[in-house]
Length: 193
Image (cartoon, rainbow, N blue to C red; front, side, top):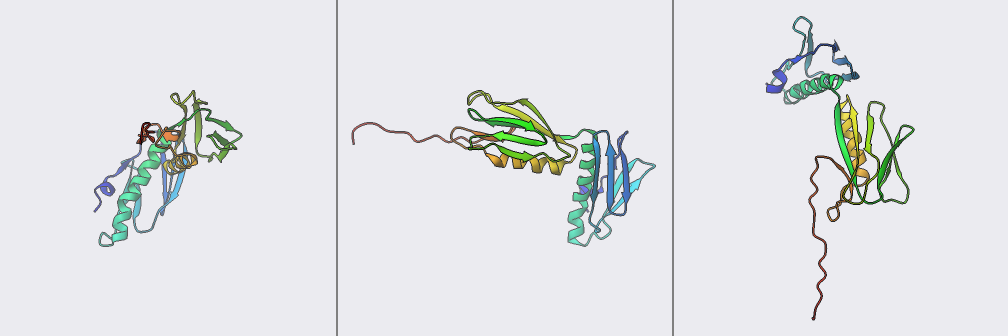
């Protein structure tokens, strides 16, 4: 039995959870999320105790054991997402690099001949704090937030993939908590041979 899967999920005030078979719908102040889960696990709503319980009816099956804790964690993330929302802050380093939001697209100017446009998913919100870099020291800073943890992580990874940070000067797009391992460039020796 999964130690994570056995824990019941408490439903906080202001959140509504509906369970219909394997479909779970969670509604809260930050939005509504719906997800269909695999039939190997049972999902039950305990209205009296205000909690969701995930059961593994077949603990001998390896697939259902694997899905037990995963299903519980996904439902927990849905509840946290509609109450607090998830967020990720990104930074852009590089002279002349900038970011802006234009008619539902994130426009990144990061050293290519043309700006890169990424369509912003409907469930994701973008907040730009510093739109342009100032030299190589002060980065452009923006954040993405969403109640859907998977959609947020996917979009943040797509943004970073446009121009990953390079190890010599550190130029590129990175997460604010990311540490970029730097390399020393070539040393030109002068002198007699």
